[in-house]
Every structure is written in structure tokens, then in C-alpha cells.
Image (cartoon, rainbow, N blue to C red; front, side):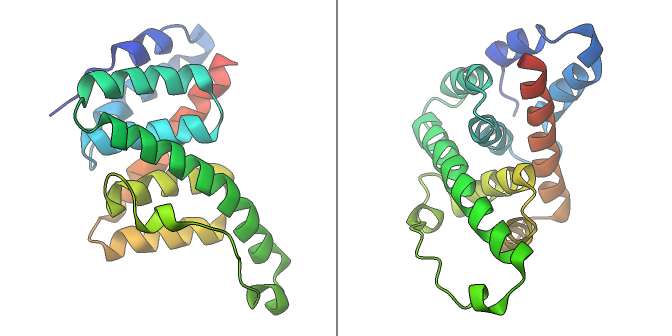
Length: 178
């Protein structure tokens, strides 16, 4: 099953000729290789929200509403939640990792993250969205945690790889839209 992305296609076509590679990558990645179409679009939307690229997020939300009508509210809600939680977590956990002091590791985070355990879609879809955002932030601890969680849930390394590739292309697209 593929999902039409007319709003994203229109936006993609506004990228300048210098970003032809990005246009082509965006076209091929949205088709997905190892992910379900809703996972691909959810990762893309979470990445666009994480990057605060409103025009890209709006296009993706439009396509999700049109192509995934019944699951669109849950998918959009989880993408926004994943982007917000990962904006917080990647700062906090990257600090703890980079500072490398056991004294910080032993302190409780005291950061509310209950949506991670109770997503509107599925644990797997939310983890894919979180992995994409973690990659965008460059948080090693978060990347390892979300990849391990996905593999534990039965997802392949190929699917995790695709999630990060989607986030990377969304990042490049957002850059081109500035």
C-alpha cells in the first residue's frame, strides 16, 4: 500500500535545482522499503515538527489526513508528542552522556515522559518517530535506546536504518525550504 502525498509533492517541487538530489531522495524515501507507509509519514512528520519546519509539517499533516483518515488524528498527535519529548530528552540525556560523571548518572531525571509508554498509535510507531528525532539531535544515548527498543520489539535494523534516512532527508528538505 502506498499513500499519495500531493501536498508534500508540491512542496518538494519548490526546492531549487541545487537540491535536486534532495528532491529525488524525498520522492524515493516516502515510498519506504522496510517500513509501513504510516510509519514513514509519521517519522517524516515527527522530524519536521522536531525541526520546527511549519510548512513541511503542515504539508505532511495534510497528506496524513487525506491518506490515513481513520488513523490520522492518532498519528499526528504521536508525531507532535514524539518531537516534543525528544526535544527535551535529547538535551537532557546528551548532557548526561557527554559530561560522563557517575554523579549525574545516579540522579533521577524527574522529567515526565508517560506518552512514551502510552502512545496513541503503537509503541513501535512511536519508537520509530523517537529514533528519527534522536538522530536529528545527535544524542547517542537516545539513538541507542530507541534502536534497541525497536529491535527488542521485533523490528529489523533495516527498518531502523530507514527511519534515520527519512529523518536525514526531512532535515535536508527543511534546510532547502528556509
